[in-house]
Length: 307
Image (cartoon, rainbow, N blue to C red; front, side, top):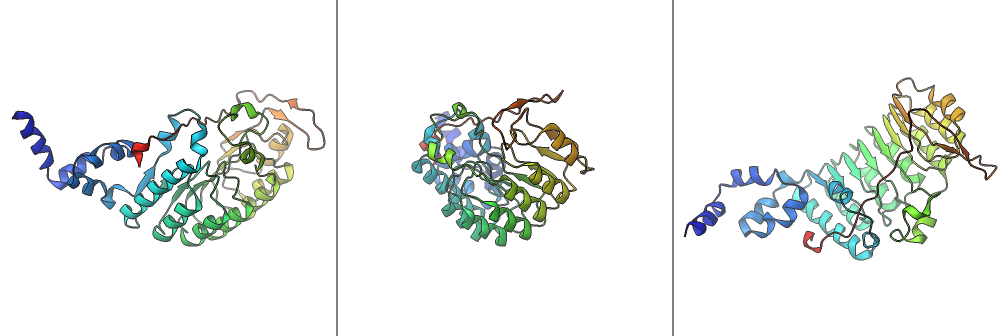
């Protein structure tokens, strides 16, 4: 009897109190818990107040590598989640942090959420310049973008984003460690790894010419040369943080000579190996306090209960 009364009391909570409780939950807790309690709770869970931010990154970071994450089935699940959140946000979504989505879901979000300020879609093999161009034209308030490990996105996207999003301050365009296949063996499709962008200098030129207000830039394992680095250092005078980890075609002298132009620069992460573009012999270089950045890629199959 006492148990029934307790359940009834929870079911009769005032909407504002229930909203206060539910708003403290993580996305995963929300998606796997209160949505399934009763219809009234589901209604509250879909309130636009809860969905100005959609961040799945903590979930991805907490799981180990898995080939399933790169499967079409998993991509469809992520797309479904993103489309649902876009609908629930009623156009008020300002931050998206997911992985393994596609042009399909991203275009859907772009058409309905013009006030987007943060877009992080790393490891999304089926996001292309097509949807990113739409974002450049429709989401001009973008402040941060992460397109790391998105091999179907080219320098054309960097040009369009730079031209149309003047508030952009953070760009993450990290690539996979192409020198060590063992780190991704068994879970990242080989054909996708082979499609890794090679035009580091072209991308660097686009950044230097069109993203002049950048404050933070990550381009790990880019194949840019000293020419590309010079373009960035000349065109982005407001940079405070620059991550060049894994950029093996840059020597310590190349980096020192060019970053000295950036007066606001507080931190630069450098590669510990130099590979001359004209040769094939790696040379190890030491940088005192710096140590090689270890990009974690800890992910596994998302539970079907999330969708």
